Image (cartoon, rainbow, N blue to C red; front, side):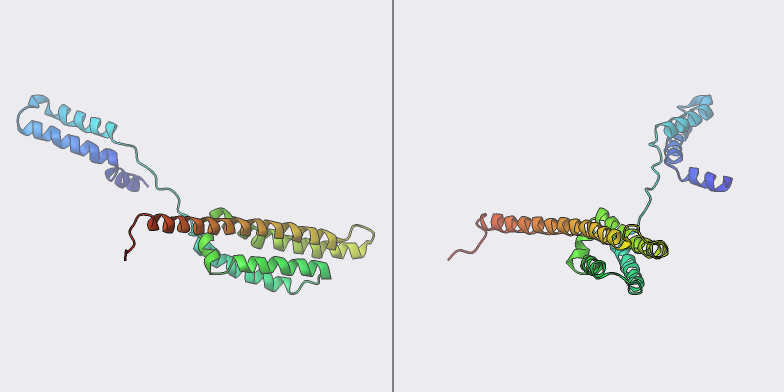
Length: 207
């Protein structure tokens, strides 16, 4: 531990700056300018250099690229879909689940949507939350609650709760899709203005 700290200090900016100033002190010593107090001069210049050196900047943490996160999310989504095929649902819940999974499939496609999401970490977070937490928990809660309801009937139907939850998740996914669509529309408008501006510069060929 002490060795690693010593090595880190030797490579630090403070040591480098102090050593550079200390070398100036040695030059003064060899030229006779430092006189008999040259050790004090060298040490003082080293200390001054170490003090004025900029502080060490710790490296910021590195996080996986959003495109890499999407690859893992696609695999997790396939696992969730496999899990969902074993769950018995009402007609309405099954329809809402199909609509949600179709939308999630489109959002996780490797085409242009993935390119947009690669620059939208928040969007990737929303997808990850739906696929890895919200959707599995909603279905699992439905399965467990339905069993208790069959044991003691008379409470509110768990199917209704699941249908509402799937509707809310679909709304979140639709909101994400709408945001990506707006980004793509702005990009298209920007490219149109670029072409219009380029055409107005008189750079085209004349007859």
